Image (cartoon, rainbow, N blue to C red; front, top):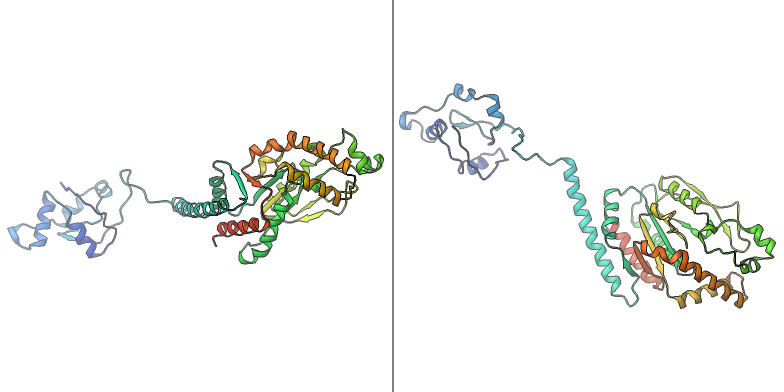
Length: 368
């Protein structure tokens, strides 16, 4: 009967490893006598076990042999590869090895992102106001497990909250640093502006004698979901995600007309849709990252009135009344989606701070 106790599975076939392993083996029965004769030839007059004795082992016994060394006439023979049995732990599969690599990448990216967030929170005016629990883990898994799949980002907020400002800051910085990174055939970023998805109401505006007259009607409100072609926006986003070049609409503010020109948008690694209804329930399910821009009421009012003047509406009294309608729509349609956002951004952040954070995040994701 062969009894083997060992601390080491002797994976190497070198004599050195064999000697180390052999020191921790104990034998009983004929095999012990064979090993003794091998160490002291002729001692005790015992003969080493012959080949017939070794060959007498059945195939099933050989299969369940757990030590890699076999003995012929008391000396170690060339090791045979061990066969896995139910009692032995199977070797790692390629998937398990990849999992280890992905876990390392995920942990490394997690550390980098946490440092970037900590740095932001030390600013006088932090960019990030709130992050949903589990969001960082979710997006890291998305990046590490499916790096070739485009990331869809939805950015919503009140009118004049700073959505376009925030998005333009991202675009400016990506265009500055994209040459440092390999993006393959795809561009790093494509943006859809929700303002160009307003429905064509040029006929109604003309009949009312101009936009100012049209908007004074309580039933006419552009700050509600029905005023925007959200179905078209969703179709375009899905098309871009599927790698197709997409023709998107162009909207004229003065006439409220959708032109025949439009924009040609190419697929990219990251696709941003920004607009007051970008996170509407009919769209939100397709986004990987949902961002809400939050700005104080006083700043919103100041920005909105300035923008109305820049767009040619110089009647301050009418502008103030219209602003009241905008604020009501915000409370009813836009503010509630903040609770569904993955991250809430301060709409009063400094542009240089936003650009710096974008560069840090882009470098972290691209492992630079």
